[in-house]
Image 1 (cartoon, each protein chain N blue to C red):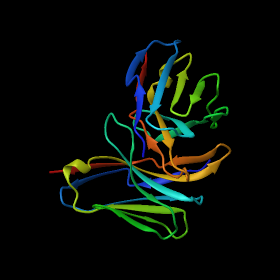
Image 2: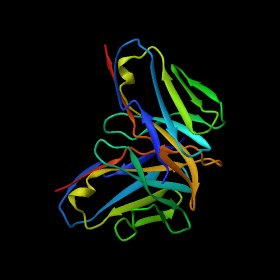
Image 3: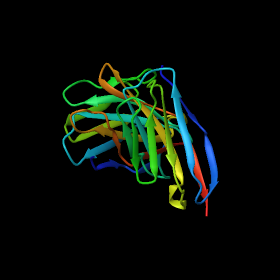
Length: 113
Length: 115
């Protein structure tokens, strides 16, 4: 099956630092999504990317859809303590029932005040 | 987007029993999905539950173990049958509203512990 390799697995940074994480795949995806999950909650959609090469921002978050359609990255600028959580990339493809998401392994972000 | 609720939020169950998880959406959606998230792991799709058709299960998941109902456009249930400790996970439903079905929004999850 399809797999998404997400790195790094975890990051422990100082407040104010910038963060970068990425996902790569051997398969092509039509859409890339980035989610954040906090303890006890479901993933929350942060950014959706639809076109190869697309660069999209949401506040301090910036994500890009790789030109090959096999990778994506997420940057967080000037991190703050509330950025703590697990960030997941997800690639959208079609299965027999319609659309399906394949998730990366997640990046656990810890921010030291 | 959509507002999604799940019941129960958590439960502790005995081996061999079954638990039915409910997912309620505040708007009508065609496409709903059920995921499992094992402790410390990522999300894995169990099945796609579109209203008006049988649920489509992913490899490794079968209907006898995870029966799904989708009686209308705002509601679905997932049953975890004949549970074992290996079924201890977070179970999440998601929906893909809109016409492009490209974005999925998740419920808060049901945290299941099987003893």
